[in-house]
Image (cartoon, rainbow, N blue to C red; front, side, top):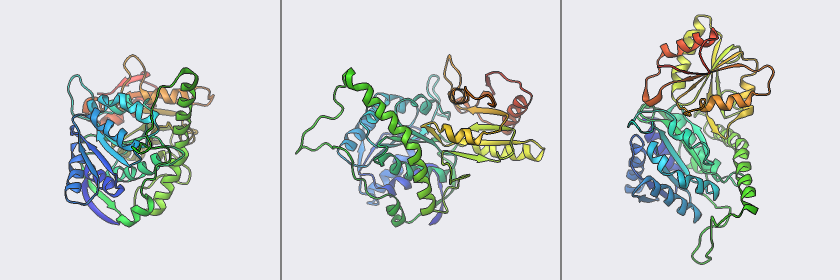
Length: 391
């Protein structure tokens, strides 16, 4: 295990190289481009034996991964924002065909107006396409989650595509120390991909993804839903195996119980912030400062967003009086996406926490300690609407 200073995008490229995908489909889009650029260097230098497919669009990238995965090979791509939106049609097909394609989404705001800066609207808009979604806070988590997503998606109990999401620029272009293990240890953790179900073969022609008549379509969709729900347990198993294999890597609160969330000073907290991504680093420092002033406050960081880790969240928030949801995405005409999930989760509870929803960081707007302080004061005093925009 060696520690290197690198930007998060390059940490992901290192993880992809060590996962040894047979096919990488690449199309540049800011701020994702550094990932596929670095992978192209690895391919050109012979450091990875992959077919590097330069496609004409993001639609082409995900279509190439679909076809490659259907032949029984490990595949990878990366995108963000409008590129992810352009993939939308095929995202449903990949998950419906139960192909374990792995992708990185470097979160970026959607147009219009044009923005290259970070919020979570792109991946949140893809929450219903049937892909596992995990969100990283640090460069180390970017590396670790990328390795783990291959093992999770390819597990025979799951066979579901996955995306690891990280904040554009705020994290993707930031240099941090990253522990990089030896290739042999990665190979032990992540062996070569062996397809479980039928694969395309010119010698044995077949049809994949045929028409689904009403008499079968619901059953097929239900099996897909069951698989993504089953991935909760597989994610925990893979995390525990990863922690044993690479003990210097990411650390989690209560890893013996859950991987899906990280608890930060929540043990005696009366007020808990909930958030995803790199903003959690800012919130942790704010929590420390508020604690020094006597505030009983903590942070619950969501790592797994799809499938939504209901039980892990309930356990973490047991006894908490007030919850401030900080989210970098909106649902026009409705409530915030995470807020809606939590409202549903606690709907039948008699001793449920008071929930408040705060929209932050849209279009790359900075989230400062002052914002966190204001949110804390509002929820402490019972102020704020069901959806409060904090500029």
